Image 1 (spheres, rainbow, N blue to C red):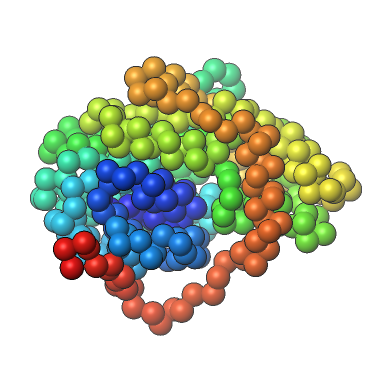
Image 2: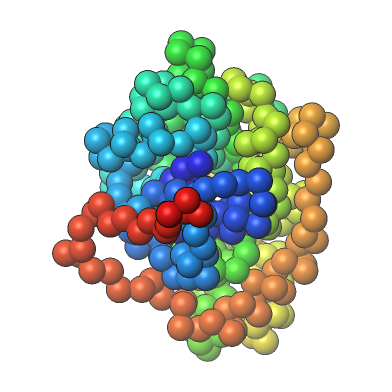
Length: 334
């Protein structure tokens, strides 16, 4: 099985989950190790004889083809995912998220991949003043990142309808948990507050997001990998909706800080006021049940950042290192 982006936040948690399942014979991680991907996220797993690590880009068609022909399934996490950066680097987002996805699907078609899980986001549905988006709701992305993911979703589903590639799409709400890169609001605020620094809220902090522990998302993705019906989309939610101001209040309390640490700043452009998904389909059809209460997961995350302050900032990258760096563990057959 190939896991693209397996050294990133969600991908690394998913790889650990796969390696804990004894029926998964081999996992190959393909990751470009950009600023948000760290080999350290798989520090203990790299010694496993069932894990191969390949440093490479999903836009490298020759590398992708070589890997795909030797595997039977792909779980595709690799993506540019920071909304603010997408305003200034939209071409990079389109190349990685759309063309990269096509490169993987093209190889999957040629080599008869048995399952392709394309991991996406609730942001493709765009803002909802009321109600919840189902898998049949129209897509209405409002920022370059979300637009690139919506396009990649369509490319993936078209591969199923046109060429029979057994694609499933998952769309999750906001993930959080240990080891998340501090570009996202929870690790960003936690790292700043623990360092005695202030944090900023856009507008009046009234933007609503649904919060999903990373392990619950990985549970849902594994269910889709094992039992999802090709051609189907599955929303994965956590059930806890909070405004950013409500979230900030919880973080202030856990970090021992007060509201004097918060500064309100003008809202950023195209900051969708509310995301909301209906995830009853995956619950009814595949038996998905979130296991992490939000407050427990948030306390766990803050505790992790307290204990791992050396990982707050991205590790330095060797820009001269070859992009196709391969670590292959010997199999039982030698």
